[in-house]
Length: 83
Image (cartoon, rainbow, N blue to C red):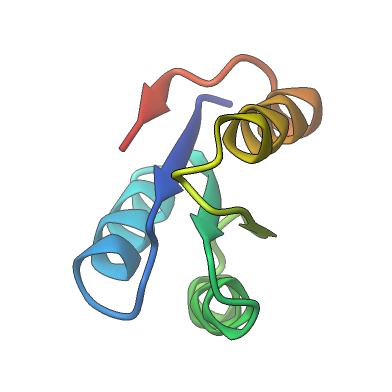
């Protein structure tokens, strides 16, 4: 299964992109700064049958972002699409 990471997956465009990628069959990891955001987005996508996980990381923190990408790659294989 192909995998994608959506950074800044807030309730608007990021969530919509993540949902579309999940509908297309990608395993999606959503990354957001606020703890509630990934949970809300993953619950919505998960209810529609998509493969999704949520991670918390500040995209301005290089170490945190690299750790999130490593976690996504460990879970779903190489990240093929980064948004």
